[in-house]
Length: 130
Ligand SMILES: [Zn+2]
Image (cartoon, rainbow, N blue to C red; front, side):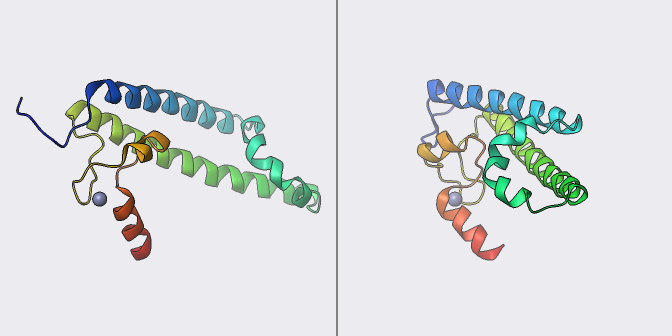
């Protein structure tokens, strides 16, 4: 293997991989819970909305929660797809490299968002366009 300066050291990669695998397991579990109609996992996110919920009629609440579930589910699937890509990159030793500019993604960013595929400046660019 040739020496590549655009590389994160192995011990760090193992940490990211560990995080990704755990995150994936958590998300799969959440998807399962949503599928069962079990809203317990959503409580932390819903807690800020209790006052709002009180104003909704029972039938309306159901729709509201169902819609929230769906968007949460989409969100989870979206992240899962990103995790898959990140795990693939780990295997191919291209993990931590920005998809757009090819520079290394800031380790602090990877720590917070191990499945990030863009560096901060490219992410900002993308948000401006999107
Ligand atoms: Zn970039």
